[in-house]
Image (cartoon, chains in turn red, brown):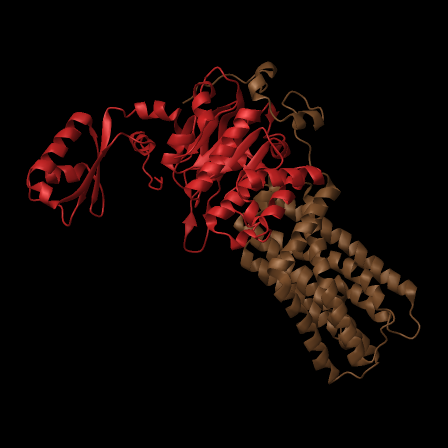
Length: 342
Length: 287
């Protein structure tokens, strides 16, 4: 779906543990104080709980987790927007806790919100952002033209962002993030709402910068498919903690002996048939869809029984799949819903 | 969990041949202890100009209807006041002058408070906070743009008022000083209100209240405002712009007093823009 040749070619080296860590995070803690309100009080929330991370030179490193896992809080601390309660953040040798203002001179950041750019045209949004990244006027215009061309935005360069579709607007913001080059890109859900063409443009642009300039990328996502396809390594966040950190394939090896079986019933599940109530007890149900995570042997037996016996009449569809990062997340004890497969 | 290596040493940071970061960043950045060279920061004036230009362009997309509202409101007030105020009287001067500066208050105070309130509530400030720009350039650029939006409306209002109340048009050029100075004072106040308000609705409310104060205390002739109302009028930054402008309608203008009023306006402008910059830092960075 995404990515081009560069990553495949570089995949091994990017995940190579011998590569230098350029972003080192140690013992990062952030707690939001509770609020006392009339009638309802919210308790104190530990959004980040002793986070340790190493992002290595030239890799695409992912932060994967459902909404509320603490990804945004972590990114805000990594980019100097939020001061941690405790811990250390070092980027390319710069202490970002002591000097948060240096982050903007090392990082190109694409946040989730576009409100600061919404009323500008695509071209002016990119150019202004380049100027504010310290480019002289002529360089900002030249980079603007190059980036808009690279991302296929030249035709809509004169249109205000707020008049664009969600995916186009996102792509325009991504363009702004690229003008005024930085050794590190932080992309928070960059492809939300984009069609496949725009997604390809994003990953091609990222790959190009990695190949030509050794750019390192931190990608925040809750999309497991994207995480599996584009990331060199991924940290899985759950309730403010990192519960795993490895390559996507390394993580999937944790659950490699399991497969996922989805059963979709036509109407009511035939609970009167033998074996079916037991399946239901083990399944995660969502309407007529049951999702089971089973050892391979057991999954085969279940498929054989539901497709051969009387249960088959009640079955609308079934799929058997190798585990995804979502299965890893659940196997590691992740309990929240909200990871997206798209 | 990944291998947790000890802190990286200066030698293994970053620079492998394939991984060489942008050359421009290395060449132009100043020396800094230890780490990879930093890309240059944006300087105050170029980034101020960039913000100003971007904000002005927003007017085409978003602000035009509201600029009309600002002018119509002031013109309407003058038509109403014409019923009770004689043409050419000192009160007429106060009404025309107050109505003209009200356009500035509407846009620079009210609309700017709303804009920053909305930007803060939606997380839009992160965009600026993750760019290496001096906070002052963001605040000053936006304030200058909003003050500029008001100039056409202020001129239209002043010309209409002078004709309606039989006042001379000779010294209207003084608006070229009044609008930027009153604009600085009011937009600084508006930006600070918008950035400090804990909620977006409160930012809107404060902006509206500020504009209402400018309306009541600016348009009514000062001789009609007794006691605390008079003090409130003196405390309002736009008052000195109103006074300066009103003085120029007389047969012989006391230019020293005009300059004095404008100086107060300018001083308040500096203070309020500094306060707005502080408010911006506070809202944008939780450092």
